[in-house]
Image (cartoon, rainbow, N blue to C red; front, side):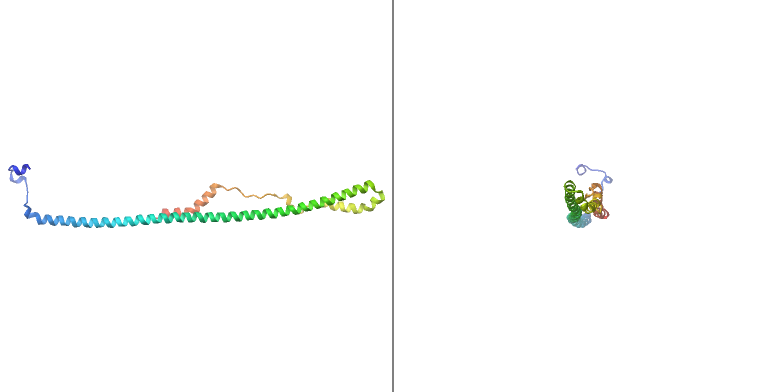
Length: 194
């Protein structure tokens, strides 16, 4: 304001008349507005690109979650199928071993019953019969007792084997590593994406 009220020396201020520079300044302002419109258009286009990228990212996250859930369900089904097969195999092995033991048990019971009858008969024979009567049965009883003495109910040595079924306990660290190895394919895929 002081400059308009006081006279100054001429070279101190430079000025141009508005009428002389108005067209030039208006052209500059129009250029600035045009440049601002271009920048605004670029920003809107960038906004659309960012929005599209966010939508793709969001959709890919949903899809990745679904893939993880699907992979997990597949692994659970595989584990359940294997569990059922292992249980079936264990039950079959148990049934086969149980059948073998039952056969041995029946043979032992039958032989023990026959031997008890032979012992009872021989004891009564020796106690109540005359020596000549005992001699009549001696060879038959001797042969029969030799059969009993040589009887081996476990000719296949089943009782010498471990009559146990075993399934080794799960090593959680190994199981975890296997799952990480399987699921690691997905992690590797995520890491190589730009």
